[in-house]
Length: 170
Image (cartoon, rainbow, N blue to C red; front, side, top):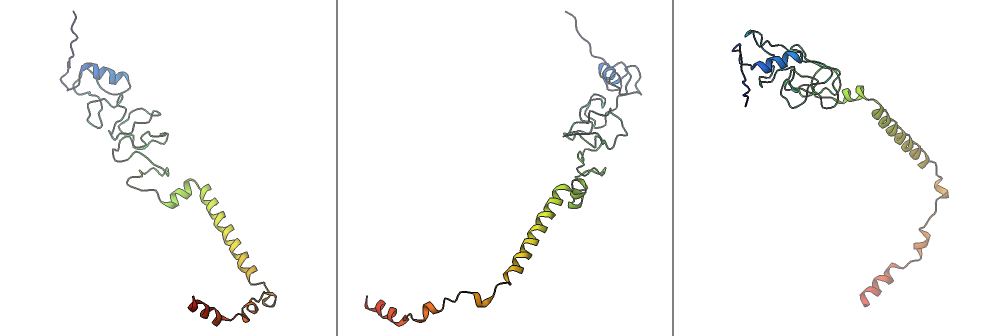
C-alpha cells in the first residue's frame, strides 16, 4: 500500500499541492520558494485563484474576471455574483454607480434614472385621473337649477301630526 505524503517543502504554511494548484489556476505561489505564497485575501486558507468567494461575504465572485488583488468593482457581474469581490460589506450595485448599495442605499431618483418606464406610466395615470376630475367638476356646474326636479310638493300635503298620534295609540 502506497502512502501519499502531504508536504510543504518551503515552510511557508502552504502545502505544495495548494501552491501548485493555485499557480496552475493563474494565481501566485511557488512550492519551492517561501517568499512566494498564494494570495489569500480573506485569510480562509484557500488561494484566491481557486476561491469562489475571495472576500467571504457569501456572494460568489463573478465568473467574468480572474482573481486580482486590485479588483474593487466588477461591471460584468450578473445575478447574485459579487460586484465587489474585495469588499466583504458590499456585493450589489442596483443603480450601477460603482458604489455598493449597503453603504449608499438606492434612492427614488436612482430608481427613476435606472428604469424610468414604470414612473412615466404612473405619471400618465395620475395625469389622466386629474384630467378626468377636472372634466367632472366642470360638468357639475353646467346644470340649470330651474330644470331640477322639486320634490318638496310631495311632502306639503303630508300630515306629520297624524303619524305621531297613531304611534301613541298602538
